[in-house]
Length: 578
Image (tube, rainbow, N blue to C red; front, side, top):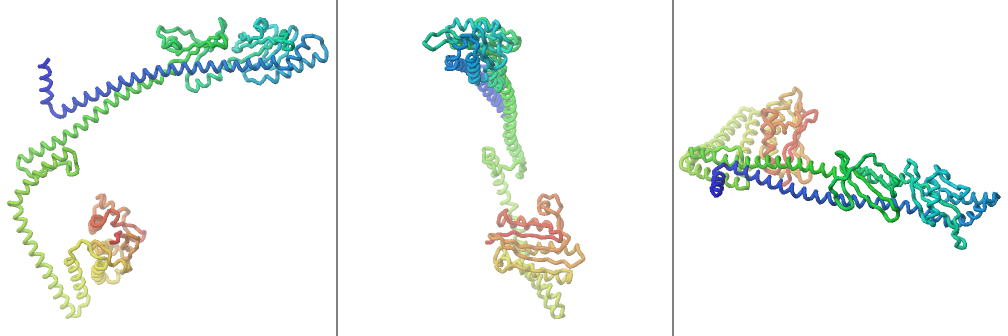
């Protein structure tokens, strides 16, 4: 046994990290699924017991409701036999003398019966005497009928108590009979029998509607001694050997199972038996169990797949680190990596960044000893060149300017002077941003040169608020946009090109607007240039750079907006007030 344990430990120790994680994940997922399954089936078992108990209790309440309806009918019979009209008019009828009082008594009794004929469960009511039947309602039984004869006989023998028995009809109706005793002088003489024909099926169907809404569809049988009062059973049910409880059990008919409960109430000696298809109670639980089993399997597969994927991603970063080490070992200090670890804050990010920093430190040591010295010398030479070139160019331009003036070449003098100012602006201003006033002056110098070049083909209008002169703008941004308007508008049209420079105050920010009357620009051109869906040409690169410069200097809330006005192009430079 010890050798087996040692062998397993050695095997696990020597396998790759990928396989180690796979074993750990598989065992963990199986344990979680197993525990969840055991707990779930335990809960389902407890839920089944509670469901069976509650269903039995609901069925018992249904029987109580049925008997309450029957008790209500008994109360009606109590009211009828004790009614003053019945008590005073029945003795007159017993005389059997056919006169006006006899007829009036029959009418009065019939009227009284109709007054009590209000319960919707009562089909008909009738009072039977030796030679007479006084009735109301419909579908009443003939007084010669054997059921009526039995009801009258049992009612008289019951001593005033209520007698319930089947009507013998296929409509599952029942008979409620009471002997009418004379109360006057407490003689308690029998004056007739009250027979109430009750619609038992209607009472039951009203109670069963609730279960039908719950999709229970119960079957029911009501038996009085050996007589079946009501039954909607069409199957022969056999009791299984297993009983769920003393008050309910499961019966089987072929492959179908039924939940059964039996009750016998004290009010009436009737036996109530209800059968509910077991699938309507436990079917949803079975379906839920099946669904849960399927879900558990799917969750296990998905969890296993995701875990393996996550582990693979982790191992991938370890493999990348190993490849970096092999590359560095070969003396290559430039290590390319597909993944950027600078913003990764976990252990993997720390290890990669530490290794990259070590490589950079070593590379820096090499550069300090050799490459850096060469770069310093080259930078020194370029610095001397930059100090010489501006002075040389200014002197040359100044000489050309005086020569032009000496020879009365006014336009050449203006061009040279404007170019000189533009060059001085470009070289003297060391900051990335300048005030709007200086940017306008530089742009005006550029426009002067272009007007001499294009003459009447170019017109400009400048309407800039002096209140905005001290606001900041990226250096040479306005001049570049005007240049773009000339290149893409003026050179593509034959008529005069008009360029307008205006401003718009928007509260905490302001807009510097350059608008031309050229052929216009494509929609969403700036986005297309940034996404490289359109290949930039000319100053297209410059517009993109200006937009990025503004966002870098201020924020992403500012920048350029390009619009096709339908009769030209409008460029809006959105800038903050500072």
